View 1 (tube, rainbow, N blue to C red):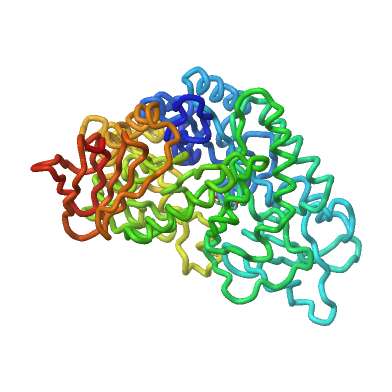
View 2: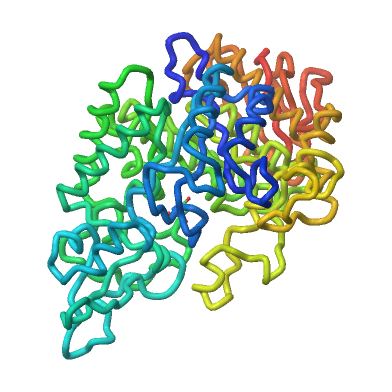
Length: 538
Ligand code: NOJ
């Protein structure tokens, strides 16, 4: 249940806090969060009780996709600080007992990366072009791209570019925006280059690397059409000829050997979104990645039978390969739980999001908490002119995109930016809505019934309980169709009511924590709708 269980490796059962660097804390007043801002707020993460912090990309980038368009894999973008700032962050985190995980974006570079500039300046078939996925233009039909693949952000996944010196035009592949050309992982030189990049961050002291689009690196050798059913929302794009090709597994075996040879418990974490628990689990076989995000919970409706089914299938698939899930409820790509669940009640104490948190934190495996989730932040409905996500323009302004989950954090109840930036700073890169201070860390720290107080208590308790039950598997407990209930060993139980009415729960000894006030009376505990409880079974 927790990284502190005896003999447990930190990544197997720990809680990792995702920092979206641009929106966490701005130290220099340019309206953009930065690494020194994160360092200054590390004590907050310690007070939350998490084991690790994952930083989204801070590398030099033109920011066509929030930094997931990397122009230099070894540096820090000036907007986020310097390499010295990064080293200071890692040193401070380690002093405070926190692990540090960085993003690695190997599926694509920025179109400003020197490799891509070199490729555009070189003729078709050249080594520089072979770093990427270029294909010839068909003379008979020069406007028809090589296949029907769609960009996850809308439109074709191919862009036609001129070649130098009178050579014919070529197409290049971009599964995301045109500013993110896909790399060619069939190229051994590219693989060698990335081994050095991985090594460089391990040498700088990072505890883990989170591999962006880990299932997408290799493409079908014949580049066959994907057919109908491709979805603009990249999270649902599964079992496509550009995903889950066999080559990835060999690559991760090699990386695993390399990473395990480095002292310290370093981890390779995959952003694998396949929505097929068995295929997903193949990425975390004992000689592959240490961990892969488990997005199943994030995609599941607030409906007990679906939750039980999802959790059961996922645990079983991971168990078969000897691994454990890394549950995720929120991320910088998803609508926040408070809004997604329609969250019974709304406001800083939205009921369903609180109950879901207790569910996730009670499950076997690791858990990821996305910044602001612990504050119960809702998705923000931003004005059109504020939107920065490439999805907005690429979809012809029909899909608003992900900015609403990336609004800068409110630290204090008042002040120009609620202390996201120092006073007198430039406006935050995404506007904070009026009244954002009601969700602030300051306000919630003073309120024992706040969502922040619930997360703090849950993470602390998870560690304590974990010392007793360790990695105990889950045993379902029948508490009626509307309730997701289970035990972990003899010493811990969790029940979540997704139904519309209160449900009596029997067999509850002592309540450890509840998302709403709940105490047993007359031998049963009445669990309100949209509520969760942790307990010691009678
Ligand atoms: C997944 C990241 O989480 C997302 O933000 C990004 O747009 C894509 N990968 C492309 O790198």
